[in-house]
Length: 114
Length: 113
Image (cartoon, rainbow over all chains, first blue to last red; front, side, top):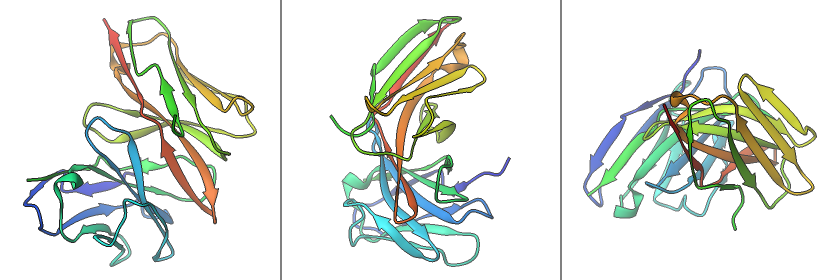
């Protein structure tokens, strides 16, 4: 069964450093998303991406965040200057259609900012 | 309460028993989805029910949706220890053609052998 692949599975970074979280969505999917889950809390929407541009972003997704699809397969989330409160699990997801379909989520990257 | 709130927050049952989890939401939706998350792992899509559907089955899972009450339930029948996980409901609403999910806080299910 096709999978969404995320790397790395765990990243530890110093506060103020830049991090790039990587995702390889399912190859024929068209819509890509990043969500995050702070430990013990609910999963929160960050951003959706379609046709090589951001289609929607949440209040969390401020100027410190950016997304890119640099080639036909990768989808990245960059945090320019990490803060302690950015520590969370970050999930990438993709779907083939924009309508009534379930998402395929990756297994997540656990980001720890120290 | 916020969109997609589940209750109970935690549920502990014995193997073989049924587990029922409920979800309430506030805004209009296109669909409601249930996901499962094993501790520290990714989210696995279980089942999607459209706003014009009232009930849906998938194996041991049964989902109901009452749009008049803005609520849904997930029933797991004949539970197994392997069903131990957190279960989240997520409401999907198409905005400008893009489907964004809003998750609830989840129900932690523990199934004891």
